Length: 78
Image (cartoon, rainbow, N blue to C red; front, side, top):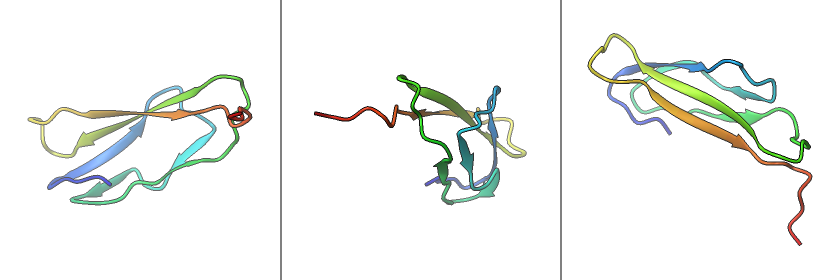
């Protein structure tokens, strides 16, 4: 959930991952953002992506960075 009283826009930091999608790249006020993993991670490690939320028409607020981590889906807890 994004809670805000302003409009905002999102960007995916380069390099953009091919294993995830987001349901929207802009919004305003309180809104929901859905990040979907579109591929399994079987690399033996983690995959990372960064989403950057930037206020629209408001230079007094700084952008917010969110790190998305995809764990290895082949790892099984014993």
